[in-house]
Image 1 (cartoon, rainbow, N blue to C red):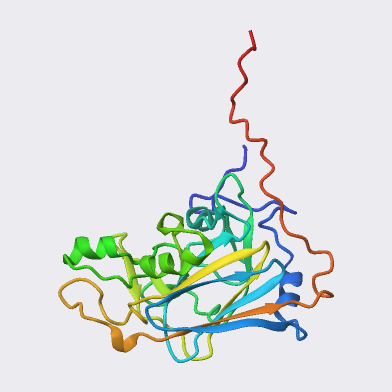
Image 2 (image 1 turned 90 degrees about the vertical axis):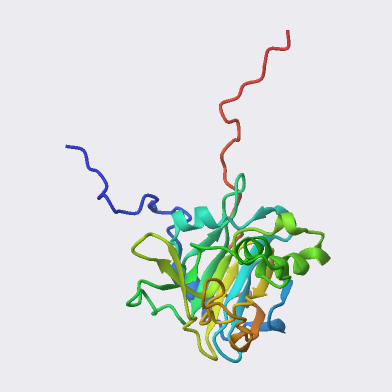
Length: 282
């Protein structure tokens, strides 16, 4: 009898040597590099967005400088922004909530790991009593369109708008903003299979860190919902301004000795013919 998958086994499984079968010892060494050099840092104010470069072979750390706050993260190939993060495929290849040693993948036809997560102070959060987990890929960014749909009111500081303003200096537009990684956000599916959001469990000093596999343009929004402890929609909704806090971003150059043997991953090697054949010349 041929072997078959268990009904709930992961559909996408790694084979030895594949991009999913990563060198954990290497990424641990990158995370623990005591000689890494801080090359960029900034504080992102509440209800705002900013974009920045993370060169290949560098670490980027998103921090909680004051208290719980959710951040919406977009990623592009700095040199070719047609290549950007693919949240849906990352959910399938990694998980719906990501942590250390998971990777964030790019869209077709590129399909390669853009970054690898190397540090997460909430990695032991796991699944809480309500089914919540952190660092969410199930949902996406809040946006002014759905807000107007639900409330009839315009608001210009949702994450979609914050990210749109952030990328304008890099020649990108609203059409380049895509489904996000909700950093520090605690979410899940309820017993009706509907999406829920819980209060952010992060505390001052917590962080989320990733290693850039290629040159990255990152953009981050400090969610206008703050720590999401206040309902944004529905009968109990109100302005959560008092639970909004800043986020920090730090970029580190990893010591060259640590990177010995590492190289940026190549784009997917599929030939791209899609079953098409050229018609005869005559």
